[in-house]
Length: 424
Image (cartoon, rainbow, N blue to C red):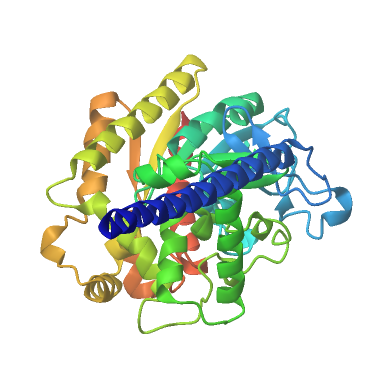
């Protein structure tokens, strides 16, 4: 009888524990549902125009909110009415003007003062007396951090074609224009949030607006700690960098606002530009994410992303042909493709072997694709490689973007490309 009483008591305790756990679970679930509803209501509220950093674009997903007149400190370097960085441009093309669009990501946006941006170098050099042309060259940069091929197509349609271009240059960054395709940005209340990911689980989690807001708050906190020199664990930095391209492009979207007329390399999302003998931890995290594009043999998921990227490029080609606008695909190399020492240090720090990678593979694939598709193609890697002995480093240390010298080399390289079309 006592044994039965003990067994009954044990069952009773188990039921009480399970009941308590069930109530806790239901409480958490109810709390999550309330938080999710509250988050969606909050995100549906109209943006405050004084604090908004981004505006939605139905085709390109997002652009930068144009500066108000009182925010403009430098007319040559601010966020213009097109929703990009640079001076204002009339929608109607001025007479005797050869208008070029430069479409791309943070390379086109630039990590140097706008006067040193490679598209400004191109414009300056092409308008010198050394090139006989009756038309003035006007270059309009259409670059936003976080963009990749679908955004290039989108901004071409939503903004570019209305500008009546004579030539379109599309800048394809081999570092993340393929592997970054699963990531999508969406503007809520004037801020940019990422609602997709190459990680299946993270992509699922980002469907929750509550978790999306929580992730963004975490990323902002980590970036502020990194920028102010506070200690951040390597695990936290790795998690932040791997979960959102916003860390690299413009983490905590307020980074885009306020950098227009005073942008220096220090404003880069990756932080320090001081010369460093070793790759920084955030730099290593980003390069680790990019290594699959060079894997030899190629990974199946990367091959699928390549095919998706090529479909966007073919659509750009179709749109340009339909509007009788010539265009050129320009491949931007990653620093580890150019700088052997940086590549060795990066691979060593990540514990990887160069034998597992083919660092020329992305350009080789792009070249073959363009030949087969009848698309004009320019690879910037040879020009940068040839200039490196004279110029020295062409990328900002621990940043992934070109420094002033790198921008100068690229701008001068593109002069011949544009002049060939101006003469036609």
